Image 1 (cartoon, each protein chain N blue to C red):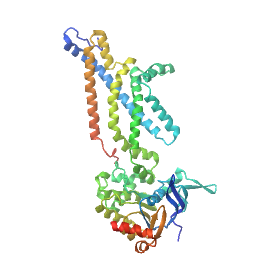
Image 2: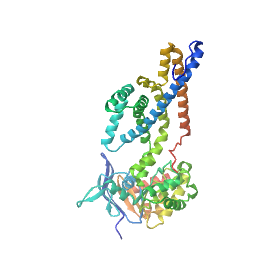
Image 3: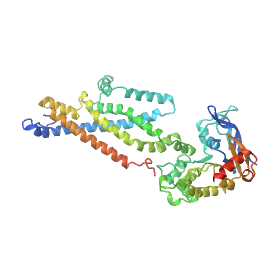
Image 4: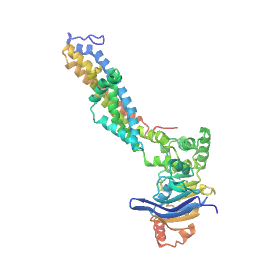
Length: 258
Length: 231
């Protein structure tokens, strides 16, 4: 097996005395679909936000594609990364946000073409062609010229997914992509993510509360608690036969509530 | 006689009022010009100060904050005298009107910069995060994501400063600008009738500021709520 695309090596994240991520060791293989579940405040989203460089780490080393994310190799040692290094590393990752975070003053098309044109240097025509391809993938071709507030939440999140994909990332990070949606709109977003999961090259890391969905698409499920992985395994192991009492408690609480 | 018009002092107050109206309107035009030019300077300079104040480097943000504070805490009249009487010593001679409009603009840029900054700060964190996740360079993020959303939100607040600037224009009369109040005073000095011209100035001011306020309200209604649309 080739080297993992994501490695957390004893990573810690703390705000003052409040520890969010505690000496975390964590790996994701290329093409793997990993779901992170766990109670709120367990540091699930922070893992994604660290990878997207939205949140600095306090200790340890994160590797993406074999290279340190928050550090640069300097004189044989590791020094804190500069902006140029972060930009280069960021291009391998795409993120889908809980609150969509679409640019409200740009049309759907412009949301999808802005970064490819400015960052990747695509021509207007190429960026548009790429955007239209992606809009077809998420089933929103006829909405290209609308503004985000003219779309439903589910449609907006599908635009959010397409926008991230437009940068051709190797790893897609989904931060509770359906948590802000009305229940009847969750399905259409999950359908799109399911379609992506069938692509073997794309590595996917998702934080979600949709347990049935996690079970269906994941190669591996990680149960987070207090900033560490309490238990991990295949969906069958975690959902079918959890070993840890804490995992069982969490699952029964979540599944009973559903 | 003023601006080539004669005042009529021998046929009662109404005839007098009618005869001086063209003179006051000449002054009103100057008042409006000074207001608009001052407002324009305040909008541009204020945005510049706001950008500098939110710069990541303290080497930039602190001097900008100091300048803002200094401008805000010194009287307009002091700034005006300074520009008008001190700058010529250093070879910079500006016409009175230009000096006055500039002084207004500089004074109000301190206020507008705070308004802009509030607008910039009000853009959700998620917008910055999305831009970062897409690897948009910080400058592009500022010009194409943050500003188009910040500016429409603050236009009503900026517009209120236009009304304030209009009401501060009479200060320019001390450096000989022939704005409306100055014209009224000259008429009073010459005809010994201050009541009529000054009352008319009050009335004309009321009309002008009401129109300006209505314009600002109209703009507020017509403005795009989600930011300046980028197709």
